[in-house]
Image (cartoon, rainbow, N blue to C red):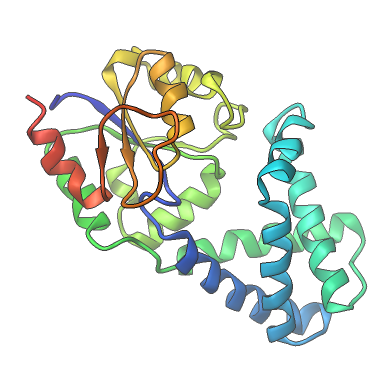
Length: 243
């Protein structure tokens, strides 16, 4: 298995989403309050409320299915995110293009400031890279967000392409995402190992021929019946014992 190309998810695998969310709330408040009014605390609370509403499973699925490509998904997501927060804070939303520019400014500035890596994740990434594995991401985030998070973790140099739904213009919601990222990476699916905390995404990866491992310390494995580790820090040893 030493020559497998690794495709590693971000949130829930490399980074703790709960810790990241708390830092986002604080930084959103510090950014928007002096620019649009309201208090940092009100913006932090509004960010939490809007994100919980947008990330509700049915709402998120509907949002992904309603757009033709990632660019439109991103535009509508940023528009609705900022307008929703403005409504809760009680300040006027800026005109759409001005609001989008502000939203893009903050979403570029925050990721490098985040400190939410799981214990042992950075060491595991460096160990895998040192052993000669090619590392890429396989995330529903944008490549720009991933660039910021991995730069903040100090491991950007360990990774090749940051997939990033925008890279292949395909949302992470089916087998096509994996077919396209493997083709973009220039490998056969059988050469890939996908590490993710979402059982369904691993099913999709396996359906196109990739190997896959669930990274999840707790919770049900859903439809996934393949291998499982508790945390990313376990991946180097798990791989070493596969043959």
